[in-house]
Length: 158
Image (cartoon, rainbow, N blue to C red; front, side, top):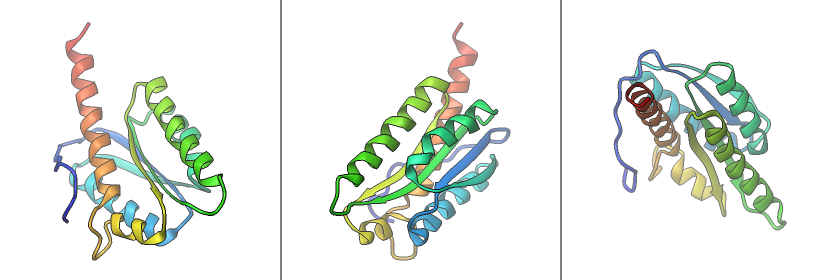
């Protein structure tokens, strides 16, 4: 797909990953989940999927997954701009919350929350047939690669 990020291929056998995905905008979200799932399967990671009502609920659910033993999480959500400030509040809460989760737990959060002006932008990024990007796959790849880097650092420092 044109415009995709770096290709990261890793062997993540033994890593436990939780995909946490919102329920809004199911066609886009299902595409994101499919991309993340494909990457996790190809990397041999153990993984599960948890669904939450929306992107606002991603941070707390990701935190509990990481505190409960997951080595990484992949947060997937879709927030589409409307005519009210709600978009800004939810986008900022999800982004700031997921950043805090990563820093507080010391574990990676694959960021696959799409903040969009319209539905077409999401369809273009969801890894669907005809999409230009696969943000679910990219988020999963980033989470796995970071988890492995953190394992290596923890094994060599100290």
